[in-house]
Length: 423
Image 1 (cartoon, rainbow, N blue to C red):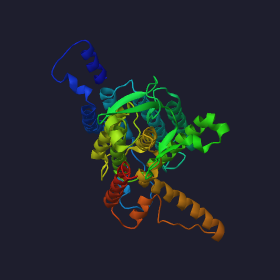
Image 2 (cartoon, rainbow, N blue to C red; image 1 turned 30 degrees about the horizontal axis):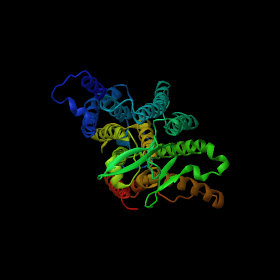
Image 3 (cartoon, rainbow, N blue to C red; image 1 turned 90 degrees about the horizontal axis):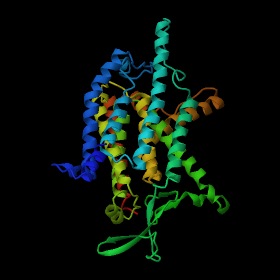
Image 4 (spheres, helix red, strand yellow; image 1 turned 180 degrees about the horizontal axis):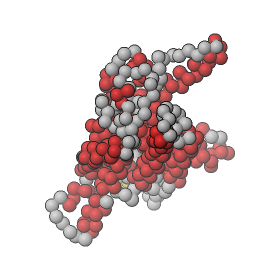
C-alpha cells in the first residue's frame, strides 16, 4: 500500500524528503523485516494474554518426556502472530499488483485458515470434555479430519499450480540466439554487449549441481500427451505443498524448532528470489531471470521477521505454541515459494530437517506394523518418533536438541546457496 501511495505522489509531482526510498527494493525488504519484528513482538504479547484468558491452552499427552508436563496449559494457536507478521508488512511494502505477491498472500490466508480450524476444533473438544466433567485426553480425532485437511492442502496446491502454469504474468527470460529483429525479442546491454532474450512460459525447474541445469516437466510425457503437461505440473506442485506442509507440522514438537528452521529456510529462499528477480545477478550467476520475482523477497523478509519475532515467545521455555495454525502455514509457504523460484528439486536438501522428521515417523510406523505381523510383537527403530523425541528419550535437553537441529539447518542452507555457482 505504501509503495503504491508513494507512486501516486510521484505521478502527482509531490516531492518531499524520503519519497524515493520506496522505489528501492532493498529498503522495502529491510522495512518488511523490521515491521514484522515489531508486530510480532508488540502484538504477540497481547495475543498470548488473550489466548491465556480464553483458556486456549495446549493439552499434553503423557509420553514420558522430560519437561512435558511443564508445557501443560501453554497457549496455542500462536501461529496467528506469524500470519499477522507476514501479511501486514507485505501489504504495506510490496507491490500488490504482482502475481507472486498475490498468490502468496492467498496461500497464507488459506493455509492459516486450515490450521486455525484444526486448532479450534481441538480446543472445542477440550472444552466440551471439561463441561461434561470428563477427563480430556488429546487424540488424533479431536481436530480437523485428516482427509479434510489434505483436501484443503490439495485446494491450495491446485490453485498455486494453475496460476503458475496459466497466468500470463508468470514468465521467465530465455537467452535467444536467432534473429534479434523479431518484435518479441528483448535486448539488454550486458558489459557493453547486447544480449537477446525472449519471454517463455514452460513448466521447468532447476537441477542442482548440473551445468545444463534446467529440466522441463513436459519431457516426462510422450509427445501425444505434452498438451496435458499442465495436469502433471499441478499434480507435482500439489504433492510438494502437501509433503512440506505436513513435514513442518511434524517438526513443530519442540520450543523454537519449527520457527527457527523456517526462518533459516526463508533467508535462503529470499536470496534465491532476489537473485532471480534481479537481471544483473541472474546473468552473473547464470540462473533464470524471472521478472517481478524480486517483490517476493519482501514477502520472505516479512516471513523471516515474523518467525524471528515469534521465537521471542516460542524459544525455550515457550510462552506460546504456534499450533497447526502456524506450522501448516509455514511449510506450505516454503513449498510454494520454492516452486515459484524453480528450486523445488532442492527441497530434500534445504528442508532436510522436515524430511528426516517425516521419514522417522513413516519408518517407525512401517517397521512396527511389519514386526507385529512377523513376530506378533511390534518393534521400533527409534526410541520414539518424530526424531526430536528420540533424542529427548536419550536424555538430551530440549534446548540442546533444537540448537543442534538449527546448526544442521544452517549447513543445509549453505549447501543450497553454494549451488548458485557450483555446477
